[in-house]
Image (cartoon, rainbow, N blue to C red; front, side, top):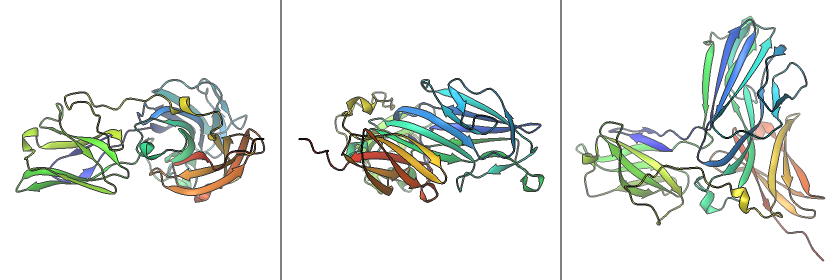
Length: 346
């Protein structure tokens, strides 16, 4: 994750989790192509389900390897059934509707394109150092896309639309700190304590590491007595690690983030963890692996890791299910689990 700054203000670009390209091909045929990217904030990232708010489906094209039709026929809901390929990879779905008109569905009110995912947080994920409860999370997100509609509902959208999904929110660059055109620092907002590097360039190609920065949420203002203009007229802030780190490589090293070892490798067999989620009549059913007699707390979080809802369940066996109202949850939403107590053992 990095942000580009010059003598002004702006918003950084977060790492991209995936892109979804929806295309109307003609004769009622729609193509949905999903490019799943190697977002370094997740050691593992599997797409487990995909669906479209699609009307009057007539037929569908060949499915990606390892995917099946959730409805068992012509429809627009699919589930992955086999091992997931390493990132990056592409999934393509073709569906035909009896409607030959189309519109852009905005991805709100549980409409548009929906993905289900299973993730393992990397060690660099912001907030992980302050205590992620379980290394794995599941969740879903809704995205805008082209969908069939009646001629009266057509909105004149182009035949191709691309949406970029970022599961991690952007850093907000507020301003450069300057006096009479001389730059002395930077003002930016970020939601957790993390370690960044400030970089400068004059050609947008060759970047120089200037200094490490620590963020202090919600807003960080960093200044120095030494002018920064010698590093160029363009500056950016790049995330290096979660938390306030001191054991850092020299500034001359390559500081790019790389995917970390999956956190599930260190999970105890008795640690409750989410294993999946699915929709059922306006509800989201979240599955939790645990042990009999253990009470687990399942948290629904937004992209800023703010807990929006919490449900508790006491398992009668090695697994349990918790229900959430889908209409009251944000998008994307993440579910994680924590043990409330340990089962009594004689």
